[in-house]
Length: 244
Image (cartoon, helix red, strand yellow):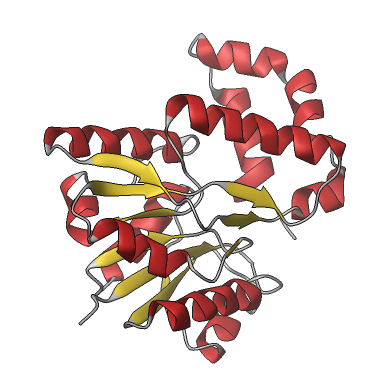
């Protein structure tokens, strides 16, 4: 019998996106053919995210911290599956995702991994963003986006790294290091990928991240020197306080 998979979805005011994310998980669950539970972690939601998630058959829990790692970890604590998969609520997984994750884990060669990503639409700046991400993943091997590993593995590394930003990269590093101790590789999906939302670009323009880098260069430099106040405010605006 195939092991139960728990899909963890952090959500802050995502009533416009949660239904399509859950639909992508259901399609993947059908191809997997084993038990799948979906847990939506409602983070400071003031809209109908929780009601929509429940109507779609998801389990919901609440976590009101302003740290995405803590939100994901709240979902992992509530999970009852032997395998844990995480995906952000505005994104989607391709239909073979869960099936491929189990196919890789059951070989006994991998500790877990991530997934390549593709934007749900393309333009020149989005293609550049996608190419830069792909190059970074290829060079470092630290694939993120969709994280997946056995529940016991997440427990062993203490869950997601307790950081407000770049927690995904640090978590990938910890998974890789833990795997190396056991002779297992940190890998990524080959046949499936994360369908990455363009909602911020739809609202603020496709050159958003390039403009952000130019406009906030000083903020990033000061953060590297230890003054993170400006960076914290930027993170809040782009992620924790972002309204859809």
